[in-house]
Amino acid sequence: MDVDGQKEHLKAYGITYWALDQQIKVKWLLNYRGGSFLLPDTEDIRRECTIRGVSYEVMSDGNTEELLTMISSPSQNMEAIVLEKAPKIAVYTPDSKVPWDDAVTMVLTYAEIPYETIYDEEVLSDQLILYDWLHLHHEDFTGQFGKFYGSYRAAPWYIEEKKAAEELATKLGYDKVSEEKRDVSLKIRDYVVGGGFMFAMCSATDSFDIALAAEGVDICEPMFDGDASDADYQSKIDYSKTFAFKNFTLERSPTVYEFSSIDMTRKRRIPFETDYFTLKDYSAKWDPIPTMLCQNHTALVKGFMGQTTSYDSKEIKSNVLIMGENLTNGEARYIHGIKGKGFFTFYGGHDPEDYRHRVGDPKTELELHPNSPGYRLILNNVLFPAARKKKQKT
Image 1 (cartoon, one colour):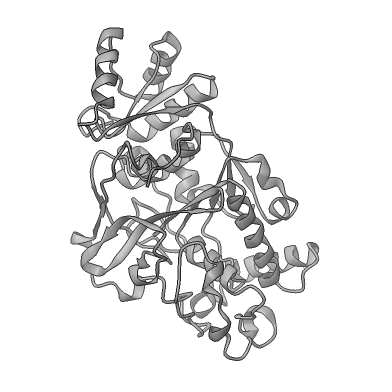
Image 2: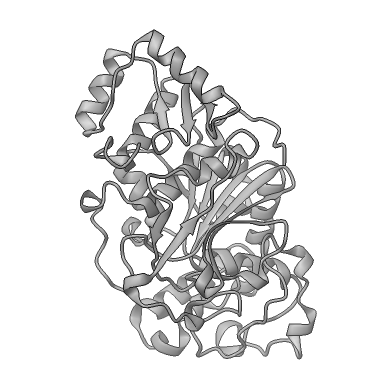
């Protein structure tokens, strides 16, 4: 899985998932040649690699033992993590969304990793318990319909999506979309607290935390929910309820395409040519979780925009790991934390290979980006629940 050794990084994750699904255990060799995977040498695995175009090398039993002994040495910042079970994957997304409008569904499809889609009805009926890993599509959990009102309130797609969301809320017994999304957010919170793995990108990250912090507070203006917001609602925000963010200020104007001060999109002064973020280096033996999530063939990842592009480092809680950041702009791009018995990862931006994705833009063809380091971060999270659980030392 290093730069020169692998011609299909993304599909290699699919091979690993396929092996796990066949009840074959895999060792993830953290920090060894870009986070390589060690699988048994079988004809079926060789054939699958050949069909999918995934590069592999065959090692003798003796060489394998030497490699594992070297990796286990205290002098090496490496570790062999056993992957045991193919996680069952759910993508939270409405039926109206096309799969190629979301980076996660695109890369899962490209890597040939199976997933199921769920939405509010399934979440509210406690079906999250059926899944090991949950991805939140680019959702607005605040009930403000993505804050698209300023630019797109007359667009047919916006009118139709708003109508569909309101009809679903009514069907589920709610007077407002914001109230329904609040309860959906609470169910997702409980899923994580109970031991689930949750991954979110773009606007699903900050809007989810805002929905938790604004529980019981009306932050929606009349064009979103039909009545006025609570007076001085900023003072009623409870930051103790959030997963990752603190001390943020909500964007009150309904015409501004922004939720709060968490996001750095409008504060960025980074030219396209120099827009990169750096992955942090962790101890594979002492901190295997962030090490797993940061496995890559490069520590420098090209930046990309979204409604929520990145996070103001000053508004991230101290117990949350900033795994990828642009220090020159004071922004975090890739963060991770523990909530109860579960884990969450937030990844800023919309599409790692589409720098400034806009409404209606064509899909990204991952065949043109088979070695994308930005997409590898997503797939690290997909395999994370498969790891044999070890007590974290720090």
